[in-house]
Image (cartoon, rainbow over all chains, first blue to last red; front, top):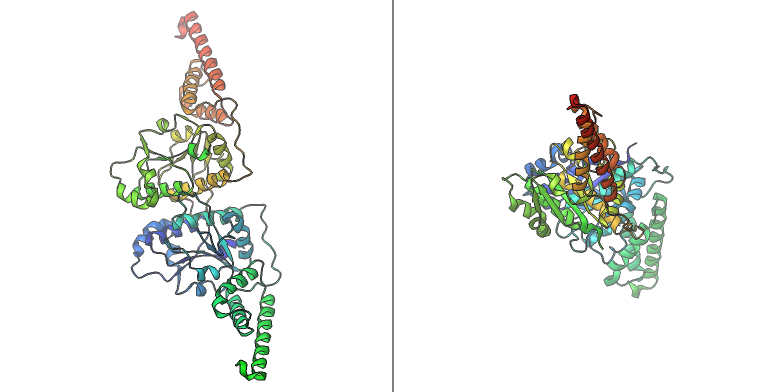
Length: 251
Length: 251
């Protein structure tokens, strides 16, 4: 099985039609064929995209379109977002070369996504929160920001190179991993629990949830793990409910 | 000293103005600033090139233009030509990752060039013969040919990454290396010698010279080495001359 077939390139609100075409060419050059586009604007010049995709127009035609990032990666386990900036939750980024074995190991058995943001503003904090890993493409301090298709090329090149390396062996699947949809169910329930138990005030909830996501994204999260975390939050919420019933002034 | 400053990107007869601009951006993102363009056609849209160079238009403005590849690389010691094809003198190509330490070691003390051919037909046999090394960028068998700026990006990315790797140490200079101009003097004299000594017939000369170039490009060639090879050929030509004088039926 060719793991590259399970790699999905996700472009979030790309602005330039030409960039979409150039991305198709870079992907096909590197043996990657699954393209998702999130919320493309309606002024895209698809002829221009086709011209720049050259002989990769089959990829362009086969692209899937989604309204939100969450829909596009619902079936994925490992989701790597790319970011040029450093800062909160962006300072633990991996180099593309470090990310390649993580992505390819995942893609041996699961849908796996590589997410690229808008040409000007990149990915939002909320979109990065949906990613299990952050990739920082190294670049000169003098001029940090890469062209979108160049960023895709660098990441796909590392994956292509590793997939063809005879010393690379994909892992055997042990326990099925939780996909994004399952993980988001866990986070939603944990968020409720953190409020109901008064663990943190509403104004600090968002920041705290980023910390929780980071903890669970550090290693693999299996379906079983996710069910345990879900059950734990459920039970805690049940206790909160009992408490409110017993102490009516709390409700 | 920053070795990247000694890396020259050479574009041979690029057809697309946009590609030239995109190449500037990729270069500047990866800390490389010296651009040479060989024989650009006179219908280039330099506004389009500027638009695609984004914030790297200073590189575009500072580009040097040459009529031939030989002029552009005369002061370089290591010259790596990129090729997508395999075949005669193209089958001993290096991966960009293998070429990076060779180029960076050279750039620590010498001008060093990375040469990219035309979008459609690449580099000619004669242009590849001027290169000391050949780089093959790996790509999918389904779609081999990379966009020009993508090819430049992959090569520059490998150089940038290696130059910033704390475990990489550039070599100390021992003996100065022969540049392309000096090596071409050697090859010209050897060619004369091979004809005059009747080592090979004129119709086989070109093929034989490619073999000779390959031998001398395998390792480093110092200025001293070049002078020895030049002297040897000179002396052999002197003997040929004596022989012709002594045996007038040979002249």
